[in-house]
Image (cartoon, rainbow, N blue to C red; front, side, top):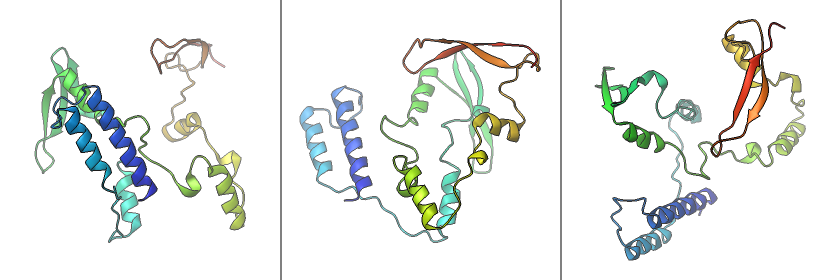
Length: 208
């Protein structure tokens, strides 16, 4: 079996087993421990094969198609019309001709739907292999450049996020949004109140 298929099968079945034990599958047709155990045993008997075939229009078309979705979010901000005590109002497609309509969704239902697009721990939206594998990327890319007699990467050509945003969008994130002259600087970092959350206190130090 392909290595990727084994990884996907193992992670999926382990998540399915833990969710069943924790009672997180209220509509699970396998409602008993015996039924869930039999289902897992049946799923393990089959090889999970990643089906792939040569694209008719070539790999460039597939890359162009996938590139439009790899970094999309579950719902864009412009589709959210409003949020109030009644729920979340969303702009959705009304027909196949580009028509739009607005629907009202309960807040808890909206969050539940949104979280369905969050990948479980251990899964990655984009997984790199070969030369771009994170563990060996620096060494293998350097070896490939040497084998092809290519010049080394120009360190000065690398650009951080702040410089990229300023060059492309004309936004200086270090500039004070109020006076437009001074620059922000971090004066204190607050401890997280919940896991994964950090806070910072910043102020404007005036014009440079």
